[in-house]
Length: 330
Image 1 (cartoon, one colour):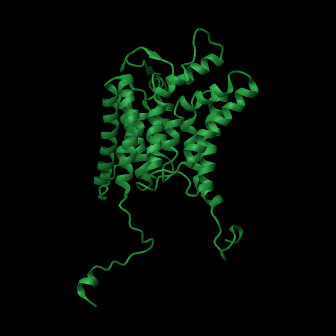
Image 2: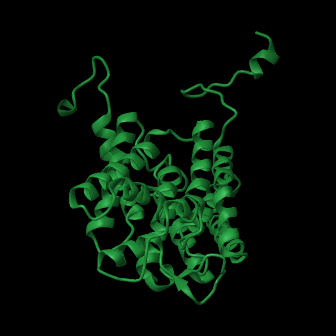
């Protein structure tokens, strides 16, 4: 055998699929897809958005670098996963959040949720979602103080659309819901990733077009929220069913969660039926929390709970190979 030909042979285990797409390119495309929403947030809340985002991204990358360095591991900061986690944490925070709380959030996401479980691909729940919940529970005041649109880091705060809805449900007077058009374009209070539905939609459709994510989870998530809200308001008569169904899609973190967080490769089901279960489950839990619990928002909790169920969903949806043993025969 020719020596030159022999040296070109590579023996490795299956699968033998060669693709120009790798982890860093996928993460970079997701970061790119979040840019429209980030730009709208800068326009709505001011330049502090850039500073807060930079703190989240830099601290997330720094924590991963330091962890790898201390444990003599191969550096993985170049795969952009830590940078994406930092960006997603920023998108889940109000623009006036103190920087030290944001840094604590990135520590939870990178060190506790990601690295202690073995690094990328081994975490059992979404790092950014978990960090957001930890910050929300630990620093409720700071995480629910929303600077007014077009006023960066101002001490005067406003309520989110879901907060206004909750106040109206409790009998408050003198307040009214923002229009669905305002929610769609992005001129309301909230976290950075909640202010513009159209920006998130554009980013999500870009990821679907590039086949970075499957459309199953986003569409079933959003569709379930729509159907649940439509039926609820139709039965109770507490609002126009169509208007309120659209409101619940556009308000809060549904769009961000559906396209950018529930679709996480590691913590979402593998098979199509599993993805349907994931989307429906997220939608139902979100609406149950919004309508019947004490919190006005439920997207983060719904995704975290469904992340925990993902191994069970994968096992439930697994098809038995021809000639293989049944589940109860294993």
